[in-house]
Image (tube, rainbow, N blue to C red; front, side):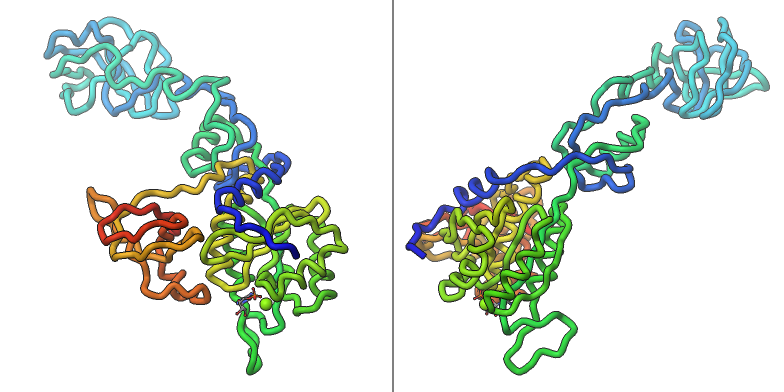
Length: 403
Ligand code: AMP
Ligand code: MG
């Protein structure tokens, strides 16, 4: 394969995202809507509150009757939540009322229980109240026809509660994209099996499946393909109904041609295959026929860091969501040397300092095979290409790994 210049990370991500289509819309019950991306406006089917309701336990009164206090009013009935006092409230009258109950006609104000005393069927109001006090007016929250959360929103528990309150049992969301993937390598066996003397356990399959689920996709684990053209081709062909194919490993210079050789007869069209980043230079993107294909490096840390930077936004984009990486600023916890020509993603701890920027402290060892380091990291420090040396206390951009 001809030499290719190293592509900047941002450009590589933009090229991947621009090659993707959003999935179709589907209606799902609220119980399945958490974390899905809203595809169509959620339009309220009712007004909330449906009438003027009491916000407190107390007495529904006419404001005019309680402008001078103390005053004695006749208690003529009761309104619990889910009930109502049906008669008009007349001058000099009050209705015992509870939170959530509708105000009787003629009443416009709630006097809280604590500001009253009782004398048989008389209530003595001891504190003056302004008209409208402690009343939740009809439509305060939303009205029939109002739109709830915006399209493109990743649905939260509060969004789902809002949809329920709007009397919408279903929401329109984008279908979760199916992400097919497989590892390549004669040395790999599944977790739980007995590795031979020259074998290691594949961590990438399960790690990637988890990342796909977290991003909102459906993982389709095609297993481990031995380092043979026929096996790689056969395994990749099982991805044809997926929305995207991800290969893991076989992407270093020596192996790269094997994946390429295997997939070219299936219609592989490579967009790029080298990105100016560390960990993970050999990152491939292209199309296998119509199927977007991402080739991730085999080193476990490189695989997951590249998946975080490229696959996660791709999965979010396919669902019509916000694919931006949400980086933030932190203070550096130890000196860093100058960076080379590749963007560096440094595994680091993140200490919370109340009222200050968090402190990001790089781990001593940054070996791209060490999952113990990645597992212990709370963020990646993003070091731009050619960044000069930076002393502890300097400001760095970080990508938090735990939300
Ligand atoms: P490769 O990209 O195939 O050259 O792999 C680079 C390194 O990552 C090698 O040391 C592989 O043994 C290792 N590796 C590749 N795939 C996996 C995997 N699925 N799980 C764990 N390590 C892997
Ligand atoms: Mg390999």
